[in-house]
Image 1 (cartoon, one colour):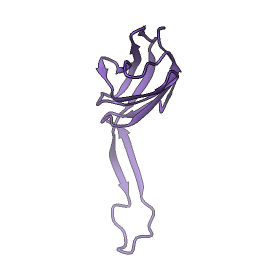
Image 2 (cartoon, rainbow, N blue to C red):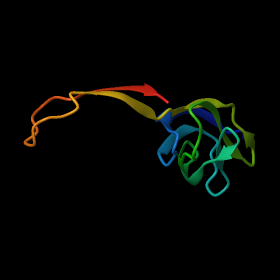
Image 3 (cartoon, rainbow, N blue to C red):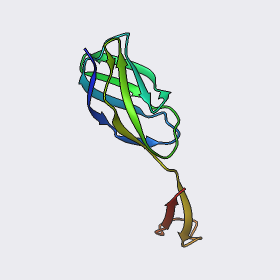
Amino acid sequence: MVPAVTTLSPTAGPVAGTNVVTVTGSGFVIGATSVSFGSTPGTGVVVSGPTSLTVTAPVGTAGPVNLTVTTPGGTSTAVTYTYNAVPAVTTLSPTAGPVAGTNVVTVTARAS
């Protein structure tokens, strides 16, 4: 049976990877399932049954990639996983405040 992916949770994560993604679908095989984020394999794949697995996302670059699940039965149709860009802080306001704290700071950032 060719595996199928129906949902990912979460559907996005940091470019540093390391977040655990839960994949639901069908046709997953304990001990014989791999997950790829684009051309890069995920790590720590744990298949809890034929409809659910977890995988740790590898390091990636900002933007969408095709996530696929492969078993002895074949490779799933791709679903989209998105690597989020790391924000770069552009301004802080105010740039100073009292030692005791209590002031509100506004942080403005852009995707890097």
